[in-house]
Amino acid sequence: MAISSQVNTYGVKPQTFIKRSPTSSKKEVYGLEFPLGKSTTTGGFFKKKSGVDLIKGAVKQLLLTERGERVMLPDYGCNIRRFLFQPLDETLFENIKQEILTSFYKYIVGATVLRIAVVPLNVAGPSGGNSLKVTLTIKLVEEDLVVFEVPVIIS
Picture 1 (cartoon, rainbow, N blue to C red):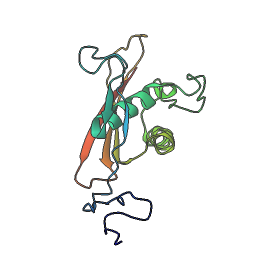
Picture 2 (tube, rainbow, N blue to C red):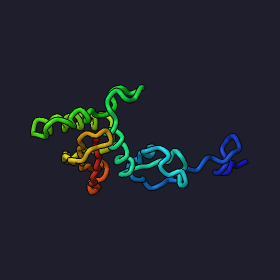
Picture 3 (cartoon, one colour):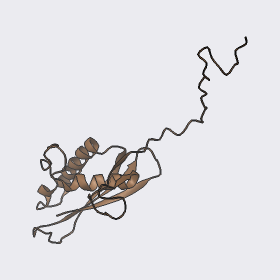
Protein backbone atom coordinates (compact mmCIF):
# COMPACT_ATOMS: atom_id res chain seq x y z
CA MET A 1 0.00 0.00 0.00
CA ALA A 2 1.51 3.30 -1.08
CA ILE A 3 1.21 6.39 1.05
CA SER A 4 0.27 9.54 -0.76
CA SER A 5 2.75 12.39 -0.59
CA GLN A 6 0.06 14.60 0.92
CA VAL A 7 -0.66 12.30 3.84
CA ASN A 8 1.89 11.63 6.53
CA THR A 9 2.04 8.58 8.82
CA TYR A 10 -0.69 10.04 11.06
CA GLY A 11 -3.12 10.42 8.17
CA VAL A 12 -3.22 14.23 8.02
CA LYS A 13 -1.92 16.62 5.45
CA PRO A 14 1.21 18.49 6.48
CA GLN A 15 0.85 22.22 6.92
CA THR A 16 1.87 24.23 3.95
CA PHE A 17 3.66 27.46 4.66
CA ILE A 18 3.31 30.37 2.33
CA LYS A 19 6.48 32.30 1.76
CA ARG A 20 5.82 35.98 1.98
CA SER A 21 8.05 38.70 0.75
CA PRO A 22 9.88 40.41 3.60
CA THR A 23 8.01 43.44 4.83
CA SER A 24 9.66 46.61 5.92
CA SER A 25 11.20 46.51 9.37
CA LYS A 26 9.52 49.83 10.21
CA LYS A 27 7.55 49.41 13.40
CA GLU A 28 4.65 51.81 13.89
CA VAL A 29 4.36 53.18 17.42
CA TYR A 30 0.93 54.16 18.74
CA GLY A 31 -0.10 56.21 21.75
CA LEU A 32 -3.01 58.20 23.12
CA GLU A 33 -3.94 61.56 21.67
CA PHE A 34 -3.17 64.57 23.85
CA PRO A 35 -5.31 66.05 25.37
CA LEU A 36 -7.60 63.13 26.14
CA GLY A 37 -11.15 63.46 24.89
CA LYS A 38 -10.26 66.24 22.44
CA SER A 39 -12.47 64.71 19.77
CA THR A 40 -15.08 62.35 21.19
CA THR A 41 -17.00 62.10 17.90
CA THR A 42 -14.22 60.43 15.89
CA GLY A 43 -12.19 57.72 17.58
CA GLY A 44 -13.81 57.94 20.99
CA PHE A 45 -12.48 59.38 24.22
CA PHE A 46 -9.18 57.44 24.07
CA LYS A 47 -8.21 58.10 20.46
CA LYS A 48 -4.87 56.71 19.32
CA LYS A 49 -2.25 58.57 17.31
CA SER A 50 1.04 57.68 15.65
CA GLY A 51 3.96 59.36 13.93
CA VAL A 52 4.16 63.14 13.89
CA ASP A 53 0.85 63.66 15.72
CA LEU A 54 1.94 61.37 18.54
CA ILE A 55 5.31 63.13 18.98
CA LYS A 56 3.70 66.60 18.87
CA GLY A 57 1.24 65.69 21.60
CA ALA A 58 3.92 64.02 23.73
CA VAL A 59 6.25 67.04 23.47
CA LYS A 60 3.47 69.49 24.40
CA GLN A 61 2.51 67.33 27.35
CA LEU A 62 6.14 67.05 28.49
CA LEU A 63 6.85 70.79 28.27
CA LEU A 64 3.61 71.86 29.95
CA THR A 65 4.02 69.46 32.89
CA GLU A 66 6.02 70.60 35.90
CA ARG A 67 8.41 68.07 37.39
CA GLY A 68 6.73 66.44 40.41
CA GLU A 69 3.22 67.11 39.09
CA ARG A 70 2.53 63.50 38.08
CA VAL A 71 2.17 61.14 41.02
CA MET A 72 3.53 57.92 39.50
CA LEU A 73 6.25 59.67 37.45
CA PRO A 74 7.74 62.37 39.71
CA ASP A 75 10.66 63.06 37.30
CA TYR A 76 8.37 63.57 34.28
CA GLY A 77 8.14 67.10 32.93
CA CYS A 78 10.20 70.27 32.60
CA ASN A 79 10.58 73.06 35.12
CA ILE A 80 10.40 75.83 32.53
CA ARG A 81 7.98 78.05 34.46
CA ARG A 82 10.74 78.91 36.94
CA PHE A 83 12.51 80.81 34.12
CA LEU A 84 9.56 83.11 33.30
CA PHE A 85 10.57 86.14 35.38
CA GLN A 86 14.30 86.03 34.70
CA PRO A 87 16.00 88.15 32.04
CA LEU A 88 16.40 86.20 28.80
CA ASP A 89 20.15 86.06 28.25
CA GLU A 90 22.57 83.41 26.96
CA THR A 91 22.93 81.68 30.35
CA LEU A 92 19.19 81.43 30.81
CA PHE A 93 18.76 80.09 27.27
CA GLU A 94 21.35 77.38 27.94
CA ASN A 95 19.55 76.43 31.17
CA ILE A 96 16.20 76.19 29.36
CA LYS A 97 17.80 74.17 26.55
CA GLN A 98 19.42 71.76 29.03
CA GLU A 99 16.14 71.36 30.94
CA ILE A 100 14.23 70.54 27.73
CA LEU A 101 16.84 68.20 26.25
CA THR A 102 17.27 66.24 29.49
CA SER A 103 13.56 65.55 29.75
CA PHE A 104 13.07 65.08 26.01
CA TYR A 105 15.61 62.31 25.57
CA LYS A 106 14.45 60.60 28.75
CA TYR A 107 10.75 60.41 27.83
CA ILE A 108 10.32 60.91 24.05
CA VAL A 109 11.16 57.89 21.91
CA GLY A 110 11.66 57.95 18.15
CA ALA A 111 12.59 61.61 17.64
CA THR A 112 15.57 63.94 17.92
CA VAL A 113 15.69 67.68 18.53
CA LEU A 114 17.35 69.69 15.76
CA ARG A 115 16.75 73.20 17.11
CA ILE A 116 15.24 74.98 20.10
CA ALA A 117 13.97 78.56 19.87
CA VAL A 118 12.87 80.50 22.97
CA VAL A 119 11.12 83.84 22.43
CA PRO A 120 9.56 86.11 25.08
CA LEU A 121 5.95 86.94 24.17
CA ASN A 122 5.67 90.09 26.34
CA VAL A 123 2.06 89.11 26.97
CA ALA A 124 0.56 88.60 30.40
CA GLY A 125 -0.39 84.96 30.90
CA PRO A 126 -3.35 83.61 32.86
CA SER A 127 -1.51 84.13 36.14
CA GLY A 128 -0.65 87.71 35.18
CA GLY A 129 3.03 86.98 34.54
CA ASN A 130 5.28 86.79 31.54
CA SER A 131 5.07 84.20 28.77
CA LEU A 132 7.63 82.33 26.69
CA LYS A 133 7.14 80.65 23.34
CA VAL A 134 9.32 77.55 23.01
CA THR A 135 9.54 76.09 19.50
CA LEU A 136 11.24 72.74 18.99
CA THR A 137 12.28 71.60 15.51
CA ILE A 138 12.12 67.82 15.62
CA LYS A 139 13.08 65.01 13.24
CA LEU A 140 11.70 61.49 13.40
CA VAL A 141 14.42 58.86 13.79
CA GLU A 142 12.90 56.31 11.40
CA GLU A 143 12.18 58.77 8.59
CA ASP A 144 14.91 61.11 7.41
CA LEU A 145 12.69 63.58 5.58
CA VAL A 146 10.10 64.17 8.30
CA VAL A 147 11.03 67.42 10.08
CA PHE A 148 8.38 69.43 11.93
CA GLU A 149 8.03 72.17 14.55
CA VAL A 150 6.21 72.01 17.87
CA PRO A 151 5.35 75.45 19.33
CA VAL A 152 4.48 75.55 23.04
CA ILE A 153 3.49 78.65 25.01
CA ILE A 154 4.66 78.60 28.63
CA SER A 155 2.82 81.06 30.86
